Image (cartoon, rainbow, N blue to C red; front, side):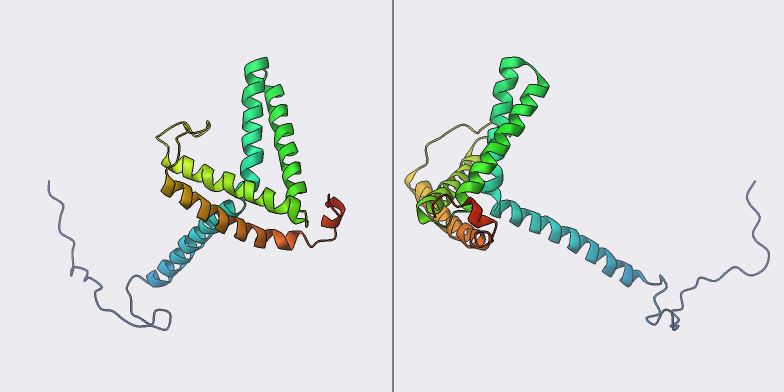
Length: 189
């Protein structure tokens, strides 16, 4: 029960590349190169978004880290005491907002007596926390990594990273401290 061969001549394979105004390259697959270019733009755009988000996270990390850490700490402690999800969520939100407000007050200052120590402390916490996280053994990311004392080279590296990060941080904050709204929040006039 084999199929019967078709009647008439067999169809020829279209292997001749013909250039037309719609397909000037003569590519038999049409606009594959344009589709590849579009896919490259989409992938490049997505990679650009990821890189920009990573840079923003690294630059604003100290401002994000302290409120989030305070919120998680408050939530864990209240949850252990009351076993109530709403109370722990409320405590987390209140602690995060309180720490964010204190950070805002410290960072918007023009006085070097308040601004430089705050920036140095936030930068040291961020760079030291990154060092501690990257050199810690595998652990739960929701809890703090196990503490281990840094060696002299690690202390020097964290110190240089803190100074460089604090300088960049001050350059970014300089623009925010010049606004008219910032003068209302100056603690030292």
